[in-house]
Image (cartoon, rainbow, N blue to C red; front, side):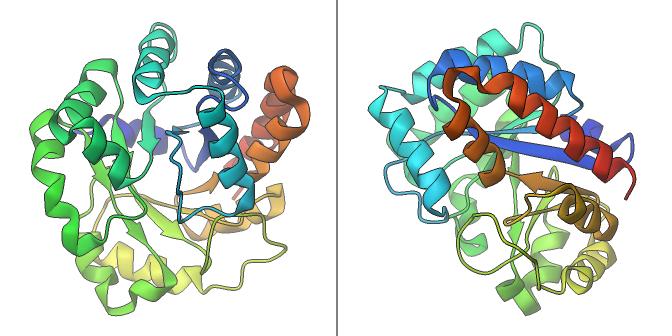
Length: 258
C-alpha cells in the first residue's frame, strides 16, 4: 500500500506545492516544516526546470529564481533527507521528464525511494509514454501519479484504471496560475474516475481562495494549490514561512468543511 493513502485517511486533503530553492533551500525547508505542522496532508516539491511548459508566469519565475540561486537536483535530494528526519507527511516530487532523464532515470527514482519520496508527477509525460518510467517506479515503490485534464475525455476511464497514489485532476485548460473562477465540469470528470478506480483524486490548477478549495474538495478528495503559495513566497522572501503557514491553515480548515 502506497504511503500516499495516508494523505486521504482523515477526510479531505489539502495539498500545497512549492518550488524547491525559491528563494533558497533554507527557506524551503522552513516552509515545508510549517506546512506539515499546519495540517497539509501531502506536500508537492517542485524540482526546478529551465523550460517548465505546464507552468504559468508565477511558477516559471520561481523556477528561474531557484536555478539562478544554484539549486540542483542533488541539493534537493539532500534537502529531503534532512526534512525526513522530522516530517512524516507524504511528499512527492513534481518536475519534468527531462530532469529525470538527464539525471538518469534509475538513479533518480531509486534515490526517491531511498530519501522517502512517495510519488512522482511529470506533467509533460503523456499517458501513452509512461512506460518509460513506470517499470522503474514499480521496482522502487514510487507512485507515478497520473494527471487527468478536461481534454482527456474518452481516456479518463483508461487513465483512472491504471492510476497509482492519487489522481491529479487538472481543473482548467492552459498553464498553472490563479483563476478568479473555475468553469470546468469537475464533477463529471470525477464521476468517471470513481467508476474506474478507488484511488483518490484531488483537483489543482487555478485554486487560490478557501472558497475555491472548499468547492473543489467537495467534488473530489482534495484540493491542490501552487501559484497562490508561490506568490506569498515571492512577496515575503526569506520570511515567508509564517505567512505560508497561516494561508495553509486557512485552506486546510476550508477543505475539512467540504
